[in-house]
Image 1 (cartoon, rainbow, N blue to C red):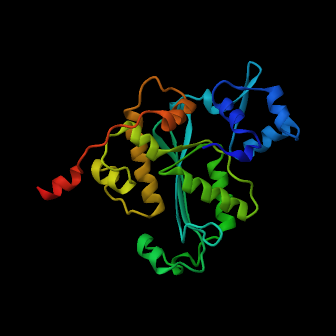
Image 2: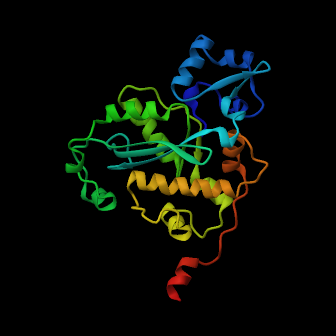
Image 3: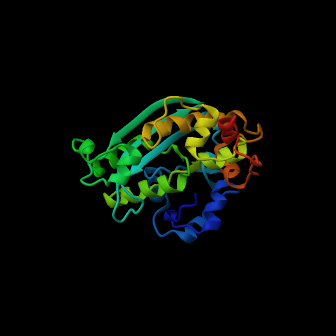
Length: 265
């Protein structure tokens, strides 16, 4: 995900992930003191490093097995940030394929319509004693740190959380991000790539409760591990992995739904 909150043009942001950005080019596009700006970006989840005179995303040099990934899922009471909010959030930190930490919370919400309750099972009454959005966003930001943000169809979760942070007075997210759906399309052959379908096909999380945040996070964690197990051995760093999710060739999908065939038999 290219994040223009960096105040750099898209070409420069791309260079941070591959060839590196010169000090001259960087200074041409920023008004603030460079050291201050690097510290500010780090506080927003993005670490930039200097190597041989050029600047890079630190993830360009971090091997996949050494990286810290944060797998995230949210439930909301609607899709529009202007009038809706997060009602549940969950995340696990993953390093070298193992869960090393976890976070989850309901979020106080005065109104959850019946349709959302039918999907998630969450009512406004369930959230009456939960912390408010500001508290949860502060806690989650601390938990996330500068880990690589992963979600299934990552754009929605990343953007909604980032805008929710801005709602409560925090700076937007700048963490590097990775889409588990896009990764699965390039590593696992499947008729569909919805998380519930993949779970049914590959038995990722036998106790899954779809549309509950931690359950979906644990399913995504198992999917991420499965994808990594089939990954091309030439993909070694986090930035190479991110690039692969965007530019790698998608696997050919079966013409017929194998699950439907099993039901018919």
